[in-house]
Amino acid sequence: EPEVTQTPSHQVTQMGQEVILHCVPISNHLYFYWYRQILGQKVEFLVSFYNNEISEKSEIFDDQFSVERPDGSNFTLKIRSTKLEDSAMYFCASTISVGSNYEQYFGPGTRLTVT
Amino acid sequence: GNSVTQMEGPVTLSEEAFLTINCTYTATGYPSLFWYVQYPGEGLQLLLKATKADDKGSNKGFEATYRKETTSFHLEKGSVQVSDSAVYFCALNMNRDDKIIFGKGTRLHILP
Image (tube, rainbow over all chains, first blue to last red; front, top):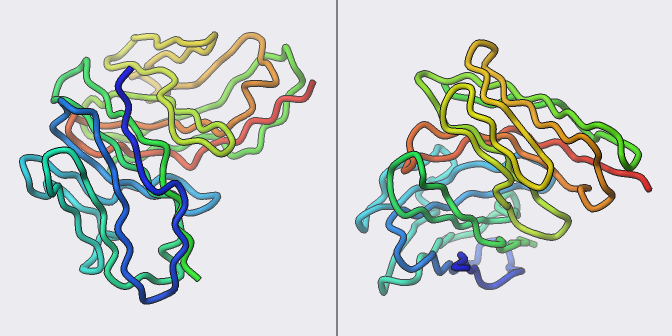
């Protein structure tokens, strides 16, 4: 069964460093998302992406964050200058289309630890 | 705004007990409703869904019915197993290309 993959599974970085989290969505999907889950808290929406542009972003997704789909298969989340509070599990998701039979498929997540 | 409220955890039950995890939602319009499960050390997996009022989603012995009149989507299972120990998230979205809004999650512990 097709699945969303994410790399790395765990990333440790120092405060102020840039990190890029990688996702490979399901190949025929068109809508892409990033969510995050701070340890013990709820999963929060960060950004949605369609047709090579951001369709919606939350208040969490400030100027330090950016997304890109560089080559038609990868979907990346960049954090320019990490802060301690960016430590979280980051989930990528994708879906094929709008409509009642379509759902978002989540990757296994990347655990980001900022020290 | 749209939101999901679910019962606080942790919930601890003995094996073979009956499970209910309450979930209510607030939404403008008619959302699709979901239950996601997160097993220890793993990502989010869709457990079941319902896309319109009175639909019942079911999977792995779990069930939830979309109740528009009470804006609820309670998760139930007749006989839980130790392997059901996980965090369960109730969630909604308004359109298939829209963000998913999650509840805070309910941690479930099943004792042998």
